[in-house]
Amino acid sequence: MLLAVETSCDETAAAVVSRDLRVLSNVVASQTDLHEKYGGVVPEVASRAHVTKIVPVIDEALERAGVTFADLSAIAVTTHPGLVGSLLVGVTAAKSLAAVLDLPLVAVDHIQAHVYACRMAAGRDVFPAIGFVVSGGHTNLYDCRSATDLELVGSTMDDAVGEAFDKVAAVLGLPYPGGPSVQKAAERGDPKSVRFPRSLLKDERLDFSFSGLKTAVLYAARGTPGSTKPVPELTDQRIADLAAAFQAAAVDVLAGKCEQALERYGRDTLCVGGGVAANGPLRERLESMCEKNAVTLHLAPLSLCTDNAAMAGIAWELLDAGQVSPLDVDVRPGLVRR
Image 1 (spheres, rainbow, N blue to C red):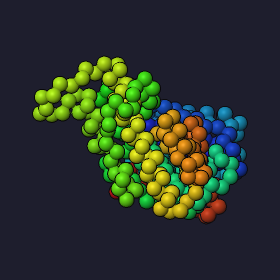
Image 2: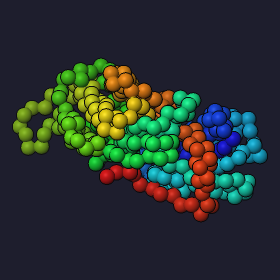
Image 3: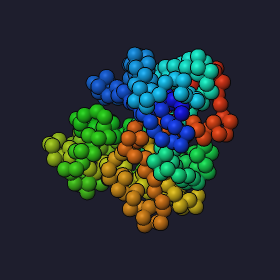
Image 4: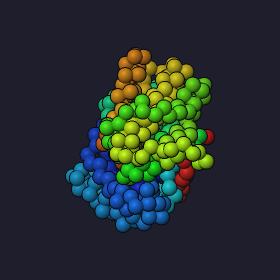
């Protein structure tokens, strides 16, 4: 068994995963309440919260799994990408445990782990495939030749789609985090009420851009600067309509780019992970697109969509490949963007 630690952003997480990829425990301490009043994650607040939660979360993960430190064979930890202060808390804890217990330390790529969550849920090898990671910090397409051999083939040029959901929610006066609140509001709205842009949808590049869509929602809600045209009152129904129209535009682009990537790289399998992969309309659209194209779809289960440590079960693949990290391994913060 291995102990996995994840602190790349604002979730303090630890999990125990067996050699056959059974998740024996998966503990996640959320910081949503801490960041809600800011409308987004504040890095310094996140890192300080990790410091107070990391030891209790690890203890709880071991307790739930019914194991002790003596039962562990390795320590896995997310080292990249993410917020530097947050990453350092988890990496420091993992290094300390690896040193004291004399266990191998495995550095995990947070993005690869999101794709690997599909492999864990499937219970079998799912590669080669197109990997798609959609979250608050990432909107990335990968050609996955294997679980650990991923080539970035498309990414966002500005906002990640989850970031766009959060910003649109703020514009519409909806609660943080934006993904769930926009989806809920959209259930009462008409997605055809406003025609928002589908940026780069017809472009040959596999990249994304959501800043124009976000701005279009802002102008629809509050008016275009310099325009004398009256702005419709932002009633509950208007909010629902704008949320539905925004979500429809975002889903069109996300599904469309996946379809392009599958065709371009000749893959017949699509693996989707990340927090935005929990969005109901997106999951439905991907299912219909894959069915139409005879593509096998693997969606990360909802429990493994948002940040968690269980998906670091990819560390077993790295161990098998001899990719053990030294105790001076460093974090690599930042977002993967072109």
